[in-house]
Image (cartoon, rainbow, N blue to C red):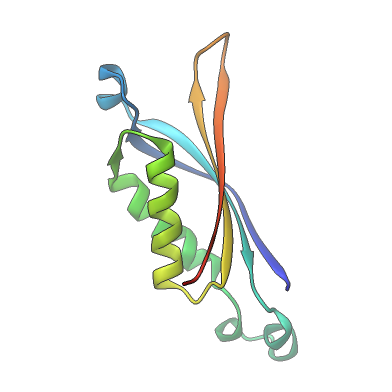
Length: 117
């Protein structure tokens, strides 16, 4: 299976369990890996035969910007399910990074892989 990558998508949203996190938008980073057969698009040079990652990015930005989850785990799951429902993606891996302040400036990061039911 071929892969399409959409990396370094930065989106501001409300996320977190602490009071200050519920009042301040934070920038999350999303990286995606989509299983996708690109052979027909390569033959035809037609976007109708591939995953329109611009449309995918717009949908993710709209969804995440309006979201208000407590945990990045929940947000990641919801984004994965949204994409699998709205696009004919057979399998995706999503990596979500959130800034944290533990010792300096760090990133909390999770990665999930989901397949179409």
